Amino acid sequence: NAGVTQTPKFRVLKTGQSMTLLCAQDMNHEYMYWYRQDPGMGLRLIHYSVGEGTTAKGEVPDGYNVSRLKKQNFLLGLESAAPSQTSVYFCASSYSASSGGTEAFFGQGTRLTVV
Amino acid sequence: AQKITQTQPGMFVQEKEAVTLDCTYDTSDQSYGLFWYKQPSSGEMIFLIYQGSYDEQNATEGRYSLNFQKARKSANLVISASQLGDSAMYFCAMSYSNSGYALNFGKGTSLLVTP
Image 1 (cartoon, chains in turn blue, yellow):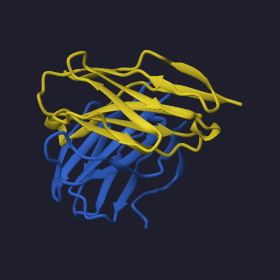
Image 2 (cartoon, chains in turn brown, yellow):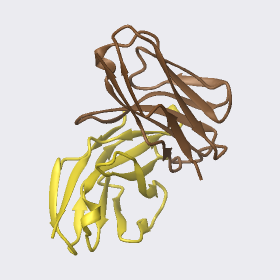
Image 3 (cartoon, helix red, strand yellow):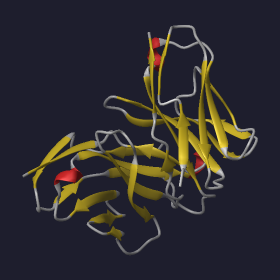
């Protein structure tokens, strides 16, 4: 039972480098999300997707891009990493939401450090 | 704009006692969902309990119950018979329909259960 899998789990980048975080879910969920977690801030939404081929900006989208070419995968890209992007990144997925939404299933997180 | 407020940065409770973690929210939506997640020191996000805005009865899941007071816009988590393994960060969150039912998180409450 894989659920939501994020790769990699840890990464150190130099300022200006690029990278892609991969999120894969095997629950046939329509909705997928990327969040970042910083100390004392809770989780904040970066981008989200309500279905294959669709993406939208969340609360803190600057410096990130996303793609959802396949229903099961949601990629988060950093084109030119900055120290301010040092954070823990979480991917999540959920069923098609009716009123109020449904439980989101989270990946184990990716700890990214930009030096 | 939606907002989640958790006013208790840290809480202590003795093993086997009950504890209430506070959460208030602000929204103009009529349809929304309220969630509680647990984050142990290992970092994963664990879903605990969900309450829909139209649910008339308070949600319960084992030792967890959600004290939902709609008029006061509060959704407090009650943990009964605390266990040492309950020591963790606890996040209150609300789904918002205009962002694919993504979750808007509070800043969290750190709970320490003592013997």
